[in-house]
Length: 260
Figure 1 (cartoon, rainbow, N blue to C red):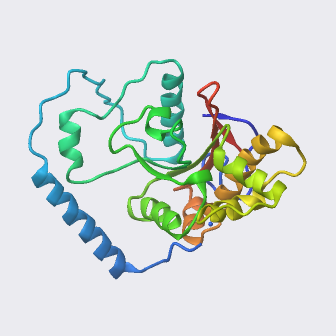
Figure 2: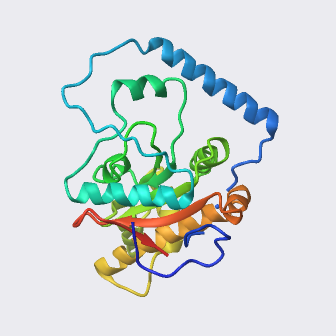
């Protein structure tokens, strides 16, 4: 991914410029129970995974080592996005052997917290396959306890070294928040929660569509900073084992670029 700014301060000793409520610390017993339950579910899934004929289209087999550091994970996502933009997708990790292997466990190398927008599916945008990404998607990348717990699980239990908060051009949730603030309108049902969460990121220094676009980036930065402030995540950032990065996907160019 390209970057649009200098390194963010306060990111600890992570090898890249990135440096938030309560994924609970839980404790050893609860984590052991969670891991046991998930492992059992995986084993059950393996029993259901009878052999299926391979599809006609054979994806390229990826023999490169799995990213194990924040920097390696960033480089892999960047390379995948370049392939996506050039219509040279590899569609990795989709063959029968991979599917069978994944029935007994997973080792994703990045968490992508993205928007629900149908035009921005992370696995396609980054040209990744089964078992590569743990994706969490909410309108406007809005956080709640379930989202925080999901991100924390990926990082603390699976050892994932990279979290990407991925906003995008022309975000409908951001537009709704900006327009609701301008008009004083209350949105129906649970959608007001989204507006309330995005509201603090609204850029009042711009007007019209420029305000919406600027707020997309500001909202990504806000969500990223909240995640980075979570104590257990911050501790991993401080040791260089984790990076939390903000990024944008541009619908007009299909490019992902980093936000400081």
